[in-house]
Image 1: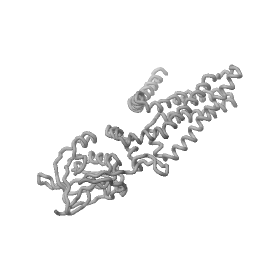
Image 2: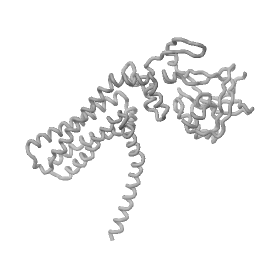
Image 3: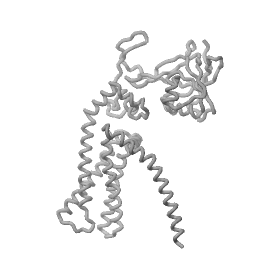
Image 4: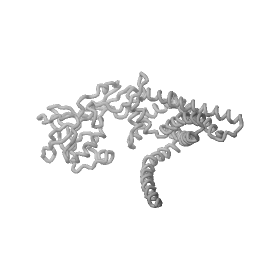
Length: 383
């Protein structure tokens, strides 16, 4: 066999032709993967053979689930059979984002231009995805037995669990990929016995205690917050006992807000990193709302001091407004703890998707309409 004429361009070209051929040699050969999972409908799909290349499995995958992914490397005495998919350049760029490396990491799949011999006799120039540097950790397993091309191996939990031996978070772990996945295929991975047992062990040994502790602290915080709000009397006509209880509750609320923003916030950022912490907040908006509520309560303190010092009611109005926004946001944090239950978890996710989607769009339109009509009505009735 002759070695194929391949040219390795820059890792990820900024643009592609209007129509390109992609030579698929793995899961993308199957229609239910390309059109079903990735929503790419090729214009043409024909079988072909790539000469001078060899099919390998040297790219680290998901231990215990899919230990390695397919790859090809140059070998003048080998050939690879696959499918040529004709698609638009935009579809091919989207295809890159769904593969390992996401089209931006040179350590993952990168497009490589090759000449493929189609079964109908044509020689077609196409892009295929190649990993230039295989993962060294793919060999970090212990082989128990082998029969022909089938073998049974054990893999260390380091590649599965989110926590490393040093206590840091492994964002490339299997569990992280499964939890952050947006497709039903990721949810199907949770049925794996290894993943299920790992989750149960993490919940029973660590997560349950922290979950209950945070829930109890939230209930105590909300008790003092409710006490401070209900006993508050701007006219200053309440009894001395109620004043004492009100001030004690306000101090406890302030301590709780400061500890939430300083201690817990600093701890989470230290463990996860700033970018990962922000990404985590996007997945749990109720947690972000709670932290904003704590910040609003802390900001209300200077206005309380200014009101007591100057007796200016404007400062009192600002304080009331900040507290009024903070109270419902604090109670909203209960939804975070309701996510773990099958009965309420799906509804909570649906509620926040509606808020960030349809209701947010309606809110923008509503503000624009009210602003425009308000200006028009003012002009209309000002004469």
